Image 1 (tube, rainbow, N blue to C red):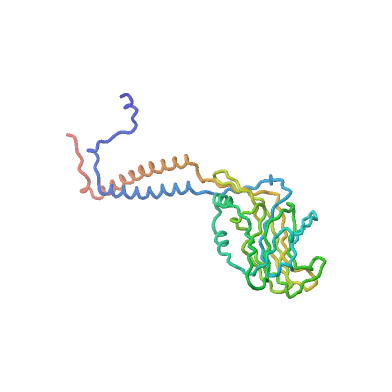
Image 2: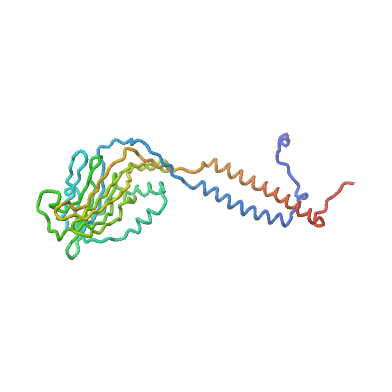
Amino acid sequence: MQLKEFDAFPKVESGFVKRTGSGGILTLVVSAILCILVIGEIRDYMTLRNDYRFLVDPLVNHELQINLDITVAMPCDALNIDLRDVADVQLRLSDKLQKIPTHFSLGSSAQSIHIRKQPLNVQKLIKAASRTAALEQSTKESNGDFKACRIAGSFAANKLSGNMHITAVGHGYRGTHIDHTLMNMTHKIDELSFGELYPTIVNPLDDSFEISETQFESFQYFLVVVPTIYVDRSKRELLTNQYSVSEYRQPLVPDMSVPGLFFKYDFEPMTLMITEESTMSFGHLLVRLAGLVGGYFVTAGMVHKVLSAFYYSIKPELAPLRRHNV
């Protein structure tokens, strides 16, 4: 066939190939190392990285949902929940949120700590967020006096800087002051988030608590909310908000200032887009594997020839016999 003239791969008859023990050992070593390198290349291909970009907030929303689940060590009828934004719009949240009598318990935050320590996996986060659930609001009663109040629910507020506060009845507003012996601003925050509720997303204040040392004490939380868009490698998107927080606590002089919990939040005009990307394409992986396999075998063969020549130069009596034409 005429195609034989284009054969670029010369064949060597098996009778002209001499196999040696050193060559067998080198083949095993090269194969083992090559397998490790190939596995490393495939692992690099499977590894995803997160690309972070800031964009001007493209969403024009006049309202934003706020999700709340806080337990305060005071009776429910002794607490007021209100919100006031920079447009001087005031919301009486006591009518919008459920106030559930309960017993105060710090519980455990081990699960949240474990989630925070894990590296961000956008694909898992979006998949878990698709299983949206409402805040669990149990009204089951038990024997004994309820000395705490669980404030839970979601409400819509203007997407403006605001101050949400939980105060004792009669403090900060007109009305009869409650008995000071009932005042205790010890609290536990199970959920505080902005936007659609995704219970699987752990926010900075989730599973946090503060213990009040005096009856008159103020706890202030300063939050900066950043709209965030997560995009996984399948181009699925998750629109949510994350925030950073700094806190400050201050003992107060009785009847001179307002004790309570104050959440002062502000919105950034920028949106953070976190995109999940692969470190290399599949075609790039094939090129790297082809170059790795071919180059490694060629290099190993050259090294074997050099070492063999050096060895036989030192011990010529062990060199294989060569045929000479007469």
